[in-house]
Image (cartoon, rainbow, N blue to C red; front, side, top):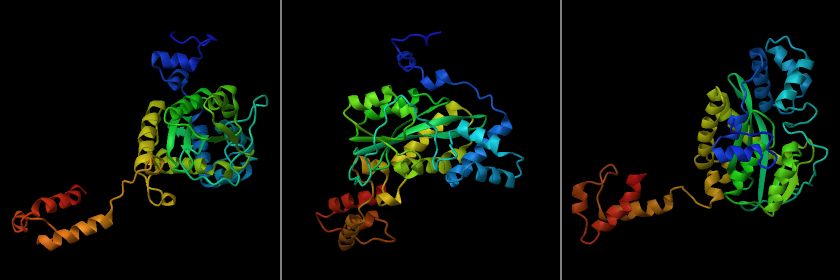
Length: 322
């Protein structure tokens, strides 16, 4: 075995990096859950995504309406496994640790005006065909840009650290916001933030709107990707999510971002065509070159006034490329 779990000097996640092994692959174990339990958990996940304010009693009622003979005790047990705490109006995938430091919530009344001002992170349940994994993501609040993500079949701190290290290679925020889960309050996680001069903010316990943008991201990921793809295993879900997050960052427009993509906002670029400029170009061409059905013919170029042909062809190029 190349990985020595008893080595106190080199943590497991660092050993995995040294030999080029994904930490999630090292920890991965096939699920031993019964298929009927997994089916119920998937239904709970779908219902919770639609109605995160449903507790155990309502969730039990929904399952019974669907024909399942199930009591609230079993629903409570499955929700605990999934990290959904009934008494809170939000997922509780990461439970707090009494010995870890807690930090105040710094975002109340704050105006978020630029990229890298605030990053936030959270964890969610992702169903598989024969099991499930957990997904963590780090997002820039201002642009909705997903800086990094990682998956694991255990709720340890290491896959959260893996995502943090990836994000810090891109940039660093002024404030990092998360819930009070043990993964985010651990010394190893908060220590990396403090080493980089990042101020730490933590949600008030059970306050769903403190991290609302990541909550919206989870709904988007599940409705637009996970529920449609029916991923089979760890490799399948990692490949699929990699493709989806590339689409989400680089192609998916957001109405709240003036129909621009998170990438455009985060990196301050604009991929939209300048239609005002093109309208001016078309007007110039119509003055010098006759066109038929908006198609530039060889004859019309030859009829252009002397000295105008090169300019007209240059102005036409953006229209051809589009």
